[in-house]
Image 1 (tube, one colour):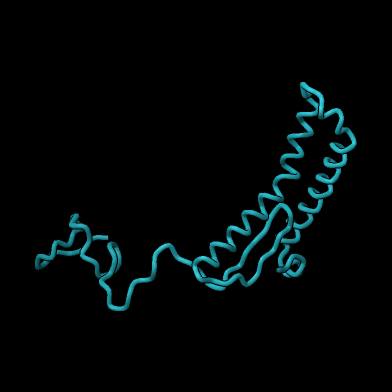
Image 2: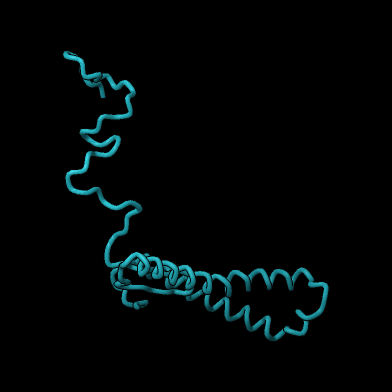
Length: 141
């Protein structure tokens, strides 16, 4: 699993890392603010400033957990379809998983199978395309 290994050759990843680290700093400040004022959060009803802090905490403290669950689900899908995870990274607010191969929704056609609808050589759906098979007819594109 890599995190900082991709910085040298990917400026977009570097930008994500910098933004994520700034967000981590902000999340730590929010967590400290909530901890320092914990008694205020125990009283009801919540005031506007308390609701705003809770909304910020929901984003800055909740998103990293959602990202790691999301990336683990990608890895799980790769494993369930018989693949291997070659590389993975987690940057608090972003992540990635690299499989050992590409996965397709449908299996590739078997050797010698007739072409699928719309592929070269298929008979089509019967709709007129300018070539009805009669002598002298021509296909119009």
